Length: 77
Image 1 (cartoon, rainbow, N blue to C red):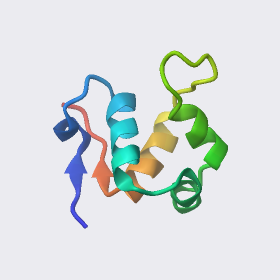
Image 2: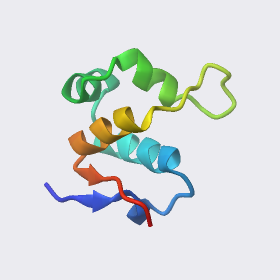
Image 3: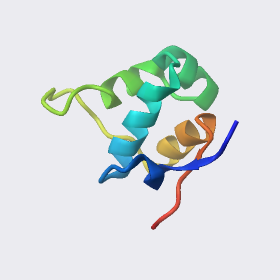
C-alpha cells in the first residue's frame, strides 16, 4: 500500500478529503470501523450528506485512526 497525503485529494477541508478517501476505499463502514477502532454508526453519521441534520464531523484523533487504516497521513500544508 502507498501512503498518500490528504492534500493530494484536492478538497477544501480535512473532512471532505477523508470522506472522499472513505468512499474510494471500497471498505464498508463496519470493516473500516473495526480496523480503526471506531463505531460503524459514527462513520455512518460522518458520511451523511451535508443537508442531513444528523451528519457529524470527527475528532482529529478519530480522523487520524481512520486515515491510518486508509494509509493516509494527516499533516498541515
